[in-house]
Image (tube, rainbow, N blue to C red; front, side):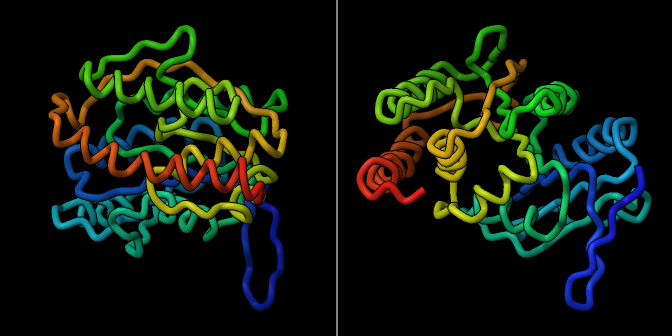
Length: 255
């Protein structure tokens, strides 16, 4: 399939078939394998694709590794304009830089295999606007510290009770959007950090987009042990986030 060329102002914007955005901060342990695996898979699926790394000013060798790999893999591009603690903002920024038929983002730590991209794409091809990788839907397999798993399940149940969206996993960092869905989400997105994942689902839910979950095998690779301090930090992030989302979607109804 040949790329579609769209003239806009004085720029030529190529319509990609698939865009994969990977937000990074100090991912030297995973990023080489992540890029190699995703490029190997996408090269079999598409002719016209791009892998975009948006880095939040890593202080390890992440950027050096990506730059070195981009010399040998022309489909890889790095954006060094990420902001630590603004994950949602970074993902949207990376996606907005390119015009694509499909937009996907995935965390860099390879907790799920990149091979699940094929499963997400299959669902999109039969008419779904938003396809979510899920660690909790029927058929999924999860290896995660018990405290973190309990906190995550509690969070998802709370979102279900408040908003009635019936999604089992709001926070998995692995999602696929059609072009139409991405444009809607970009236009209406207000969150810029971890709550962005939940916000995208709620936008899709309230706009009645077709949405489904794909069960995955997930093995925690980054934080194999979860302490009380880490959980308290999560509570500090997510409780205000739920309050903002409640006000926006149930009170203000701005969607």
